[in-house]
Image 1: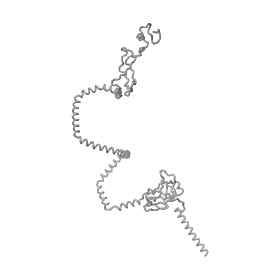
Image 2: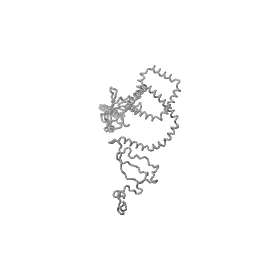
Image 3: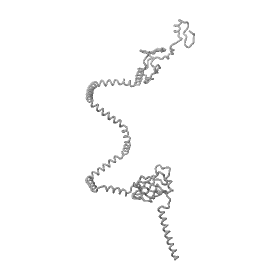
Image 4: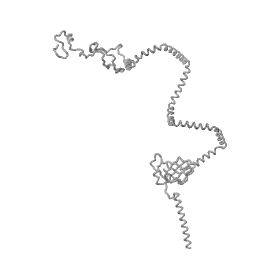
Length: 395
């Protein structure tokens, strides 16, 4: 009996040990003994192939797993994530979430995408992330395609395909030519695509410019209507003007035709005069401008002509042929301070070789101590005339 009891206890202990090993293995596989940090993801849907235990990755490295999936009445899904605590400080708080799959038929996983500008705070426990993107599975495509087919009447679909087949029957050559022409057109269009892209981009700027100018354009159109109405109202006068213009043109043709040689000769003879006038156009402009300024000046206090005169010293007398003026002197046109010449100011002048040189012979102009002046004042005085160098016998 004792031996049977011992065997029973050993058998029970063996069963307990095996059950404990199985429970530990299941717990290790499900992560029950692994410490985790809860994070929630709010998604429009979880996807058809998303199960608890799916991986949570960031840059291809697993940083957690999906603990459970909760469906909401509005169709959204809550994904409860079990994140590895050691990796939480490496994940920014504003991380983006995508629910994607490695293949079309593969199981979904949660992909954490780092943002362009990561926040300074790391992902924290209990934080709720918002997922905007869920990859569409092939099952979803089939489901939507089945929904579309449910709305289509097979008889009408058959009629449509029959009409389409009848429409293209016997037109294969034309359809092929159309595709060939389309290919040629696209080949010609391809080099100008950058310019076309630029034109499309500038369309918005041009449209805004036209939008800003729309009131003025509308006003212009309105004025055009008024002008058209005026032309209609004055069409008789306009006809008379055109008839008169035609008559004037005929008369002018007769006059110019009969005198074309004389007019050509006159124009040819005017060329030197016009060239000279053009050469001195600046001087003429200054002169006319000065005259205009003088005409706008204040009038005199007393009516009449005002003359400003002064006495100047006499110049050396003219000697022939030494003092003949030089001909064909050059130097251009000098306006000096015209047309803005100020009143009671000396006008600048150009020194030219056009007369006698007053200093050529040592002419002293007026001689205050001359013998003529003394004889006029005091009569004849004995002795020679006194010179200006204060030498010799005084007079």
